[in-house]
Length: 268
Image (cartoon, rainbow, N blue to C red; front, side, top):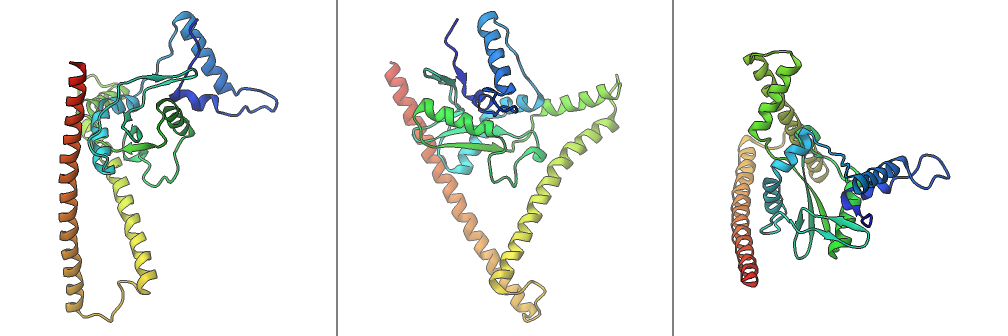
């Protein structure tokens, strides 16, 4: 039997505490170990698949590109190198010279952690700890991305709705209903997020200026001047952002190109 090594994605399972005092391992840890014994001894592998994991796999490259742009980390690409030591084994999503990334793609806006301030599940925390141990890195990021669902997966949702409704022929009404629901789920969360930012900005303005937009000490002309100043600032900000994106795109592409050439020359 091969030496037992823990997958980084499963470290969280053995780190759970037992419910009964005096027990050494939790039931979750025991179940994981039993599954690994069956896999190693008999080749029995417990597989898991869902629409959530399927989407994550399909949009992984797009999510990594999104993370690269949002975090300004230059050119990033999917890591395929597998790591292991005496105790652990795993393959991080992105492995740069300085930092690791584990990229998660939310199913839709309702499952995206818009307001989360801590890692939603400790499993991901332990997973990153394992990756850092294997690669020698001292910094890792858990990155959530909200990427459009592929068209074929949306069609799967439509087919699933027809199956549940026991319909053999397609119903345009049901199709429209499913598409509207999927779109509404995204829009509702976006609206909530934007409204929260408006409230936050209003509270900040109240603390800073001691008044709200209900103030009556400004003339119409003064309100217009305020708006013009804000819009002029906005154009400056957009110009700066555009320049930053262009710089990072060129830098990222060039660095990646040089690294690629270096690798190819070494292989030759």
